[in-house]
Length: 273
Image 1 (cartoon, rainbow, N blue to C red):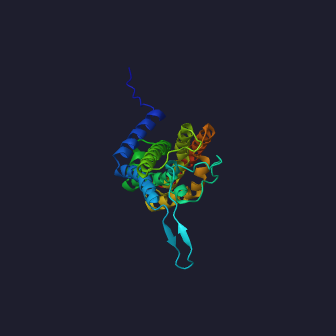
Image 2 (image 1 turned 30 degrees about the horizontal axis):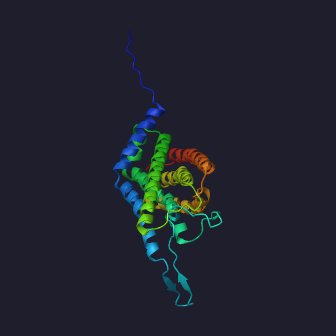
Image 3 (image 1 turned 90 degrees about the vertical axis):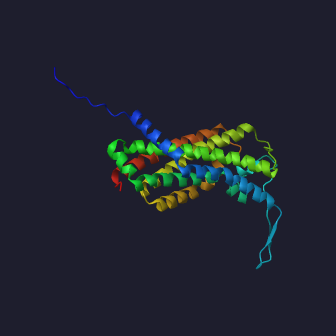
């Protein structure tokens, strides 16, 4: 009887599970991750409290003599999005005041910082090269980083939401929904979480292109996020419905698959050093 040596076939599910286990373990042990989560929690509290304290303050331009009155937030939900006007219609572009720009949508840029530094460290330390040589495939790596980034982004959005509610309570702001329902707020948050997939996919492809050059990946990712930033308030308003959720999910999946394939191609065609 002949002795035969059999090799276990590499299974996609097992490879991906192993890759995800490593990435999530690294993420939850990363100091950077907890610093960014703390920032996501504290930023809305500071912004809300400071803007409330400055409400009504007047600044004067010494050259023109024009006086500007600072308007603080009147409602806690302004940290999440623009409330409907008195006639029940929401602002189309979300407005251009401070609270409409410095709100929960900033988390789409904060997650870019995490992903770029997370992936950059892989290439700078030589971990990525060793990983691809020993066991992992480029596609597994891209999928794992996308899912890890998506999870990080969802946690940041949740932390910001909690911080916004705490900031509103500390500042004594109203929690009146102005004709909206609690379900609208839930749909809004779910839509933002699904939309995070679009930004994560962009961040991943920029990061794997720049590899160990962290500053380049950060500039590229933040620049791309800024181009899409103004669209977020239109796609995920406070009055979101199931349609917004479905559109964000579909867009997130399309971007993840499409840009994920491009990320894999970039890793296959370029040097890992």
